[in-house]
Image (tube, rainbow, N blue to C red; front, side):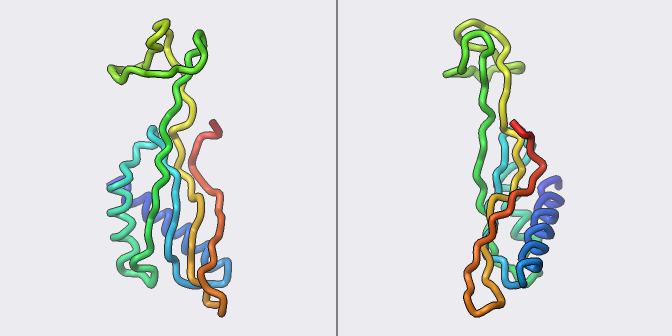
Length: 134
């Protein structure tokens, strides 16, 4: 299960960041997932629950920010509508092959944790990924 290894890596990364910030309980993680990343959000959430179920962070939420690929016609400009009939995608106006931008993201956007310090509920912004620089 591809999503299980990704969930495990995400958890280790986020757990490490919480520990680096002084420790505490991980409460929520927000990730950006691109349409072309070959990751199914519902399976990733299921895998996340399995990975965190035996940890001190059981119940930590995984929020997915779904990022669609953007299509661009190099002849007409922005492709308003794209027919999903096959690959490569073509422009509905002129028939040119469309360029794709984005959609490959796998980024941790933010994590929320309860600090071991008296003021709890800290939120850390982390920017790590295996995404394209599109």
